[in-house]
Length: 281
Length: 98
Image (cartoon, rainbow over all chains, first blue to last red; front, side, top):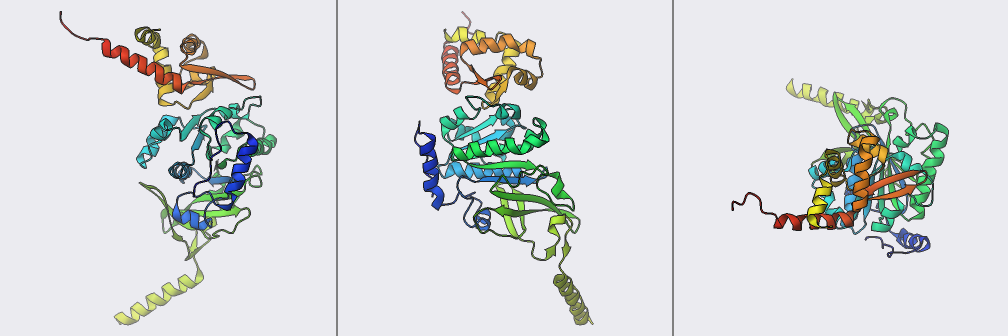
């Protein structure tokens, strides 16, 4: 069920109120298996961090979340600090998502700007006009990592907090992308600037090497106020978007990026091998 | 301003053409003059007069964000301008021998 949109010109109080009404439901990503992992979807108004290294499909998953929102009558905004919108339109089209058409229908906006402008304080925030314009229910920032280039390390947490609070005040459910090369190694830390505490939910995308091939794993690291699937699930980037497969049940150490088979599975392999040998003999 | 005059204004220089392409391909672009110049591979000084013309035409809008002045496409005005130019082009006869 789609969440009600605030009426044009409504006050922040009205918008907060409408987000409260929606609290009974969940913000569905539209990716069936992911919604199951999230026990129905994200909590309304939550700030979600989507962390992963380059090539893990952060942009694809975020766009899919927005496009599925539009299909459910929830307008969305994609704020990019990196790619120009025409590149995003092109890439989205490859997945069958016509963002330009959605923009013409005032259901979607791709905003391309500099992180320094988003951080500028003043009477009129950069996003105010767009928020008034299409009254989004969902918003993606690609990526929070870019803010690091414009603020001191010590201020990063405060600035990220300001952005998260701004979106929450407007009743917008957000996904904040985070480029995290750290999670491709043995050590696992989503951010090293303490942002994990600011967000309500953390999804991590991770490349995993199994039998000399690169596979991808998704895990929900944190979800405030809700139960969630704790398993590492395999996923693929298909021509229709992100497709989540089964859990890596026969492996352990997925988090390290170089998993190994669990002892029972090794035993089973040995057992199968021995019984096949016996059959041949 | 007639459709013909608008068209002449839009295509008065190479820089203006580059700016038009940039904003049409990226209608959600919001940036400072400096940032816009960089995105088309030029310097601020070479784009400033062309940006001013497009602002006067109403195709672009300006807004103060904190200490910065940003420029962005006015989508509604852009649609009007395109319509006006398209109507003008319909009246233009090309390669008609007398």
